[in-house]
Length: 263
Image (cartoon, rainbow, N blue to C red; front, top):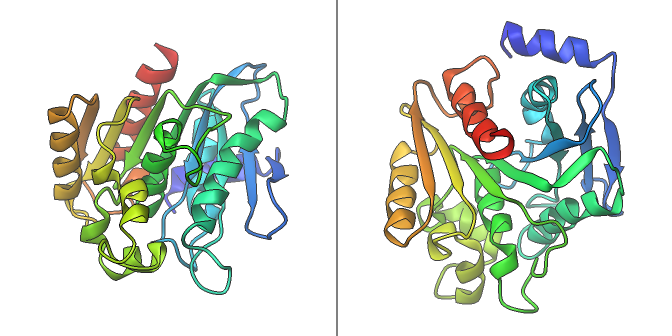
């Protein structure tokens, strides 16, 4: 963690976030970080990555949530069931993300501007954010359909935007390949659900060693060709730079959030 991230985290220890359970499983939790100033605040729902499996949790996105709160946003840092013993995968991981987002409405918190919500995901969390941003247009009865809280945009940071390119982890997530479970792939793969009806802000580091920047280039080109609104910023650094509050990649994400939620 950088020195800036450490300073932000240290300051936040004096004001712990709200801790919310959106279900009974230990992973069905989310932390709500809010600014010190009075609301209402625009809300950023944050979904961590980690290829949908342990050991990664919302702890990896806590520094950027603290930075968001410092900038005047409410940051809702979500955990979800992962692959393995927690019972994640299809449909549980997707159900968790949908339930966590809709739980914001159940809080009945007037300081949260639920008409100004953006979903933000890093890596595998970017795939989940892109999926969740299109929930309103899923077929009736589909996992996550009929959302209560509807985002006005989605920020995809170093996102797994093409599940076929993700290989075995994506097959484990969906319980099979595209020919075995085509319906799941049609709903969950971002490349199969373009264009989204909300703006997409993509940030990807050019030297990303985990998810190649070419994946975001391909998604952006395909979505734009289909009529979608997509902004792609390429920044220096590697896979984790977009979730480092001191990085140029994170600065690009903030610029897109400000344009989408504040301007």
